[in-house]
Image (cartoon, rainbow, N blue to C red; front, side):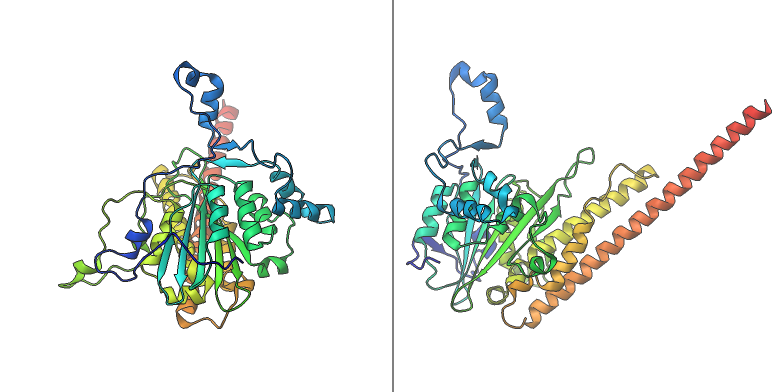
Length: 410
């Protein structure tokens, strides 16, 4: 891990009376884009050509300058593993032979300092800037550093190269992120690996389309010395949710001073999962987050719980409206079971640091209770649908028998 003096990072004062942490963390800078994005900005009649219109519709574009002469160091390492017998990484090796850029790539970097203050660097929008940041920005005075990468679809090879080579990441993390487990890890390895993933439903998906699911991949890397750690969190979608992180916490009590306890954002705008997660640092215990990786990421699980609750509510309402089994259905129910197991393990057995404090233990208990309740709600929903299907089938059989008897009589 590189240890050089930190530069070009602005501090955020925790507990400011004039502005909340979330306002500083998630305040929207002017939109930036990946400067290496390969779509040519054509002028005149050329921009109406079929080829240019097709490229403009594609979110990801191949970067032609990737590995022109030889493999990048981290990719070369993966390639050597494949040739040495690790056949379960052939797909990743082939994937990294090309680099598909996302013009809207965003990598947020959030530090928790040794004195438990939050500090955030300017967002990064291309892999060149990410490589430079990883090479220059040290961890002096920083206990925890979180990288939150948001890209449409699978992560670009150049971003994998930057993270993997600078932080010495296990390449199975990227294989997992792109292709899933797919016989990559045994059960015991999967439970103890420093990385894992979650699937979160987008409850705003229109009823007449296939539901979108967000994939969140998390890697927790312990420092070689001391009790610090680095987190890499990958979000595979830019989709926005019209949701405020405040819904995850109880409102302040009514009283003469309740207005001072409520942060009033300048404008309520839909947020991506990355932005929502960043805004939760406004109200979590920063010192506990520094000690417990599970506590630091548990708000992602709470967002997951809320989204599943909304999906189940929508399905129930649609069934009731149609007085039948609607086309809306609950998919990926096994992800609820996976989330429950995730909570019971405290994320991953490989994340264990010191004994969990009471606040982390309480969060685990509450999350397990919420997720178990959701799983029971889904079971009840499907049982009700099975009964409705059985009743409908009996009615259909009764009508068929009545018609058969009528024709027989005639």
